Image 1 (cartoon, one colour):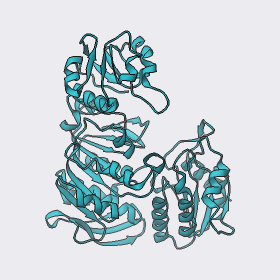
Image 2 (tube, one colour):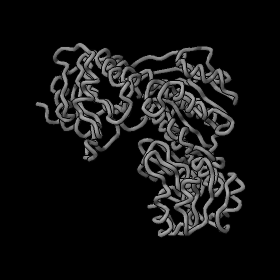
Image 3 (cartoon, rainbow, N blue to C red):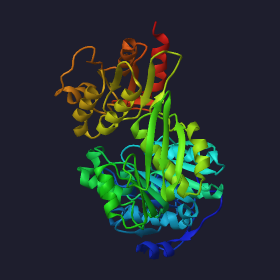
Image 4 (cartoon, rainbow, N blue to C red):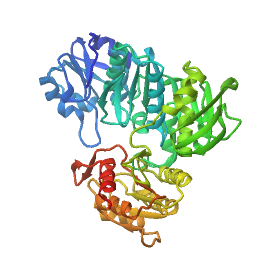
Length: 493
């Protein structure tokens, strides 16, 4: 966990008043905060969060040995806290976020912070904005699924949106290093689990909402409600919303903060395309924006969903004061995010891509995008992750068969589940014939796809995108779709 170099101090008494906690023991000062006992530094307040299986209070002794001087917990956790003072609250997660933000003096408010949420497109929009800001000389922090960046420094991301204490410390480091912007992905899990408490954005942006994560949220209304929380005055000054989906329009109808609407083709939206034209290796476009702004340019990104992502990024960039003429010049160089329709080319005549698509809608979108630029066959490889929303598996399988000419079903990250059972759930209701097939081993599946490819075809390897490992039965082994795909291309006679 990275922390600012500047010293920060708060007292238990002041924080008790801030979050309505009861203080057990004497008030004292603390200089840091974390929920991970392994990240504790001397002088820290340790957050003991009640978990689904284990209460964080069971790690209090380890935290104290590492130098924690106090604990934030609930009534159940108080029993474990015998050697240091404790703040006791009903909602530990909310209190932890508010205390972390207060300790670091609300760093997200000192940056022009932009939070992107939605089922698909968060990573691409965030990356595009990071690339735009860097291109015009604005030092920028990025927090997301693929990586965390502080200007040019890259750090590995452990999850899409960090826990509150880590997030506030990261933002404080970015402020300390004179970043002008923070662009970050905000997941529905983070909103539900109160990781965003204490954060505030100049702009909150919505891409879309389609079925995903129902193992966590249980139903689409709950999933939508989690996303919608970001678009309130607690978290944001203004909203940018793509209204092309039912959920986007629903969100726009209920938002109370100032709002800008985005649409690929709806001329009533404040930002929309007036024309798009597919060309070799990309799209030429004209985009109309607020106040009659017109941006004529070219993008190397492919597919309608990427046009949505790009338009949202351009609209936000203009709101942040970047000249549309400069944006038009920058746009052709924007590459988007790693593992998002990322080309793998070793000079072969056919095209090959890796994409992170792991929801039914994302699979349909990326296959439709490939269809736009493929004169031959679309050959696609896909699996579904284990220990995740099982209800989407048959939908993803159907999307694969309907959107491709050759569908190859394989293993993704089966985790604790049997790959054969996951594949059965994906394919049991489908009718498909050779050369479409089931190949459980992912390497063999990718090789089979490449073996079938001829000059005018496109091969898509879907589901894992930028990931560099594959988890099977609790063991993670090195596996990068981009590398395996490149090796298959190189080995083809």
